Length: 562
Image (cartoon, rainbow, N blue to C red; front, side, top):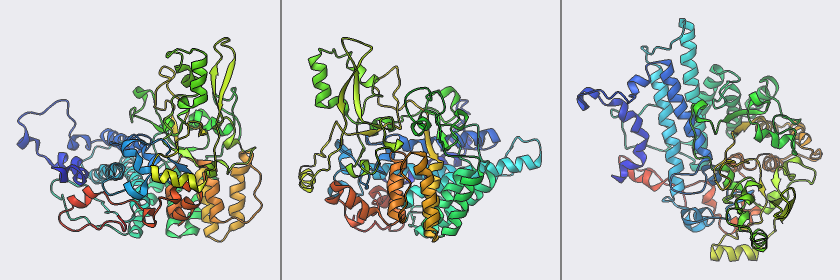
């Protein structure tokens, strides 16, 4: 039944755990792990957390029913990115004015993904309070600490999920209890965002008080992550002095630091220290800046397992389809097998699901390391057919500031103006060397780094009336990237500009724009394609129609305009 297929997926784990197996089966399957067994020991709770953290990593995969990456949906259509290569259900992220609707696949997939996470961690929180749990410690105090640490992880992940939900959908149902067959409900109401953020703050405070600064397992969030999100949430609630205190503690007293010198296995190769961070993303590699990252390979040593990480080809240009590349291959009689070398030498195949707007590309100064040839692809190369030791440059990437007439044509024709010659970020190199035509990213990856805490700190300082301190904070980031020191007056637009320069392709851009009230203004001004598509009500996505339809016990209101 379709109604149960969607919104009630929230309770699937709960339903399973509420079944009495003696009434359901006459034998006990040996290969199944039931909830009552899983949540009976410390080791079982660790397994449950691994599953919850695996859901976080899905932000770097594609959604269930589309080929655009989950993170890309939270970036494209903003001031800094658009989707030039779209097909099928993906086209709605180009033509918002007609196709972004309550029935949109991505709108539904992302909503359900986040509530699966919420119910998963609510179950952990509820089950951890069972006095019969064997925490496998050596003392009562150690058992208590283990219980609090498990709950802290779960509460941090609950706040993480509601962070996405409130920025994307505005008011949403607040669920704090494990949902099982006994308390299943169909009369959900949308909780106002201020109430949800109050709960997020409570959860994040608990997390910061019960988590360490660092884990050997890079996939686990920690105290610094909790405090970073706490600072950001305080900015969203206008409590800037509290935000200042949280961000300052992470920057000054956490043991993390900005990367300012070459390091790691890539240090002897051409490059820069900015891009080194993405080649060696973990603290154990010498990367002092990563607050939270994830293993992407070596499933045997990765408790969260492998997954379909599409982040690389989402940003890579579809350069193999560019006329200069195709002509080179044709003129040099390059075989189909040899065509793979263009991928091998350039970091893998690209799909160009998210491209930097021309305005965003031109934000950088010439000397800024964040936009040099090692950080943003400026050309495509191929081994010279006559001399394998030589390299031919086939294509120099470029952007064009298209006219309003061009975008009007694109609006009417819906073609998107795809450019195979568009520059692209190299943060997410590289593809599996054994599969150069593959689409998945092969490297381990950063999820949150200290540079973003600096940017949240600057936002908090500005909101707290400390503009000069905000400028000094931003100049720390600019100096480490060889950008010129900023001497003007800092405002929220300059901070958002600096976020674009520093974090392109890493974070959900729309969240910062919605938080600062700048989404509509900046997306219309700097993403000229969206100028023709963006309506006022697009600041928030619609509530999925399947969710509204399944909520038969009460009326769940739709966001205005949909």
